[in-house]
Image 1 (cartoon, rainbow, N blue to C red):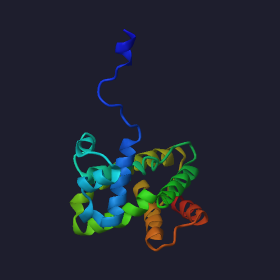
Image 2 (cartoon, helix red, strand yellow):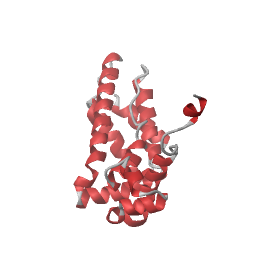
Image 3 (cartoon, rainbow, N blue to C red):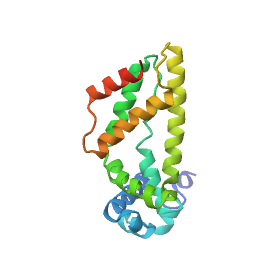
Image 4 (cartoon, rainbow, N blue to C red):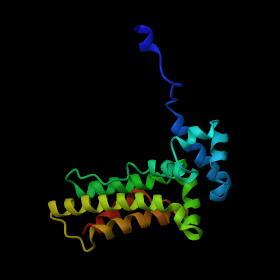
Length: 189
């Protein structure tokens, strides 16, 4: 009976395999752009056979999208009862995502894909929309509960905030903490 318990079916799973594959997708994107992103290249870089890849994702783009979207799992607005502190914390976390090596590699390619082949990034846009919808709902409730009546609605507040962060990144001038604090204070008036 003990022998049966100790026998595993198939090969043992490598716990870091998904991360290694996603990392390879990002590396290939950074080196060759969307045009060079392929399952064969990802598999060669990760040192895995194609069936291993296909058990996890249907395409190279799907693996890359997962790698990118994983980086934004913490980009959700919290509601701790202090709307200003929560929005500022959210803004800082979003701004800091631009320092992430996956995000900084993917964003230029995503902007380019948006221009020439927008369908490639539909899953990224869909995930972004879902996060935005959640954040707008959380902010709406927090503002109402705390008696804030800003001139802009929750969607517009988050749009202005994330646009400032994005433009700072694109201009090579990331927004500083003090700027984010002043912007949040102004937006919540």
